[in-house]
Every structure is written in C-alpha cells, then in structure tokens.
Length: 115
Picture 1: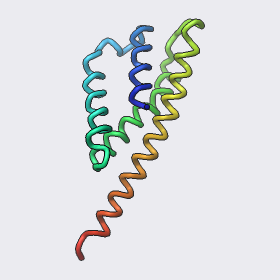
Picture 2: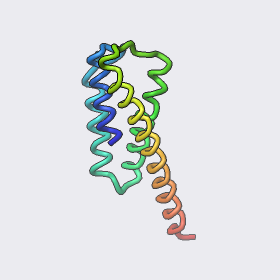
Picture 3: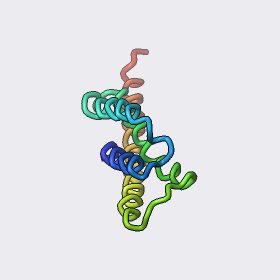
Picture 4: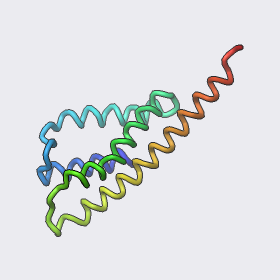
C-alpha cells in the first residue's frame, strides 16, 4: 500500500512540476526493487530491509513537503494532501512492521547459533 501511494504521490508531483521530479527513470528502478523486495523476498531479511527503507521513503514524504512546500491549487489540493497523509501513515506502519520482523528474525537466528 505504501508503494502504491508513493507512486500516486510522485505522479502528482510530476503533474504539479515539483522540483526534482524530472528524473523519472530513477524512481521506476527504485519502485521495481521495492516491489521485488516486497513480493519475492517477503520472508527474508533483505526483503524486510527493503520494506523498511520503502516505509522510510513514505514516512519522510510529508516532512519533505512541509519544508519545501509544493504550491497547488485548491481544486487539486484535497487529494494531494490526503495522499500525503495516507502515505506517511502507511510508511510509518511499514517501518514498524519491518523493524519488528528484522528484530524477530535476528533474535531467532541468535538462538539457533551453536555455542
């Protein structure tokens, strides 16, 4: 969900011509890695790490926009701001769940080590 909201939000940024959104191929590669980590590595530590960083991107989006600000019209503002709030919320939730799974995985590995 965080990935989907990030894609929607970046699309809105490109439509509103926010600074730094003219390098469209870079986010596509990041989104592909994020999607791969979410779907194919979901039960591995690397998948959790990728999801943790993806959640960080989502959670940080509202902070980045509050500092730089994007000028938008009132007719487009509601969905833009709603997406920003939803993205930040799901980003934090993704980070918390990923960190929890990383912690659980590392603790279980420590218990199974001989010695």
